[in-house]
Length: 279
Image (cartoon, rainbow, N blue to C red; front, side):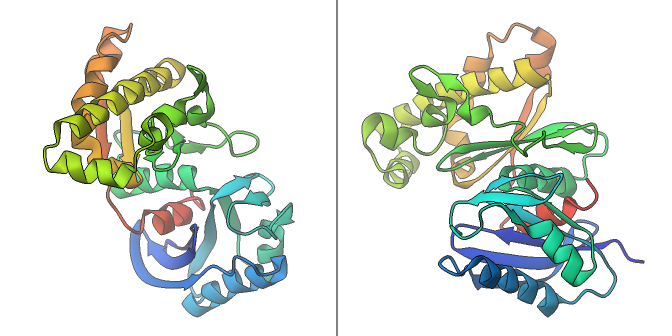
């Protein structure tokens, strides 16, 4: 049997699904999410995407959820854009009706799985996938396995208390709005044009993200971080400030071996979801 899986990426407004073979996307379909549909109607939408792709030679189905999910039981507790999905046994329903193994996890963990798969880092068996957008999500790959925790929440470093708020308040794309009441897209555009104040704001973002990176390093001692999400495109604007802040990390070997890269892959959600089947 071929090493093929179906990956489903449920986003804020859209739902994408594809057939993935050895980390390569072969076929893709997508639809707008039935956000106001009943629980059963949205489940039927997911099934419809799967059946459009077909189940021939498929070893399993992986689904990335933008919300709280138990990766062991496959119960979805909360999805930000599908209010009807509350304590839904999505894994059980789909396995019973389709006859294929189903794996679920949150979208940050799917990004880490995609990063591990796409970079083919078999010589680097541990990494952190960090998504920076309206928040900060982190997925942990440890010795080739995705570490999810009991409720899928392992690696939620963005919610750790920091200053009077939490880390993602200062170290994500919402930093500009949260602290200065500014539109992040406008700040980025001005920074790319060389506006000095906007560049200074990105340096400040880098200061906070550098503190976040130190927290990651102290907790996990992993020296490879891959950034994704909308803010990762601006990494060159806050890279220097981030690394400068990491410069006083207590363990010299750890800070000197640290590598931070970005992954710009529009279908990372599908590929990461498919990888859940094997990771």
